[in-house]
Amino acid sequence: MWLSLAAGAMLAAGVASPSPRFLALGDSYTIGEGLPASENWPHQLAALLHLGAPEIVARTGWTTDELSVAMDAHAFHPPYDLVTLLIGVNNQYRGRDLENYRTEFRMLLERAIAFAGGNPQHVVVVSIPDWGVTRFGAQSGRDVAQVAREIDAFNAAATEISARSHVHFVDITATSRDRGGNADMLAADGLHPSAAMYARWLATIEPAARSALAAP
Image (cartoon, rainbow, N blue to C red; front, side):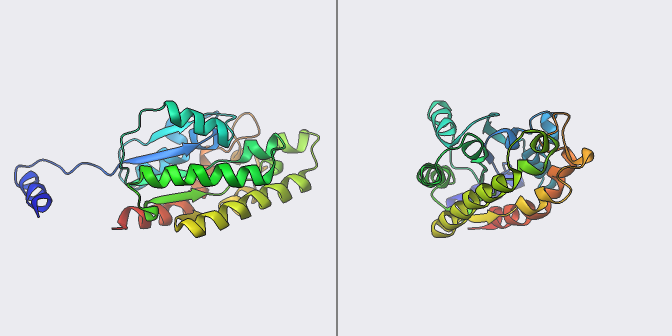
């Protein structure tokens, strides 16, 4: 009741309610390696949803354990209204074990839920894209069919854990494979997505993010 009265008083006084707070956790796909910050998908999503700038804890090359260590050192200020988690491609790239990924991903997801005030419905997990379809992938010497199978296995694990945790899970992997090797879908490094590809991801991410923000 007090909160309702306080909110009403703020509106009556012409003071805008605070914008929902958005935390994005991940790796190079979250920071948008090779692009201006405004063109990565968290910033594009924030603009679509009329949110303030997202708080991003991510770095190129991070695996699940490296993200966890960085989170230990970061000064978070929960609760957040929307928390996203996209992590695991570097585990796959470095040949890390799938069961290790399951364990560390589950721990990261538990922390993400805690940052969302303990409400899993305010958390959105984004699947790992398939880097094997890119120009870098084609030139890497890797078996790109095997890369695809391993990424599918990591995503299947994340899907299962997300379902059990009652968070939103969005699959952008199929989109990453559709025209993922085209020049206009890639940053200059031939590996990371362009702003145009990130915009295509949002067709799947945005509805889940809206549902998360609307959750009680």
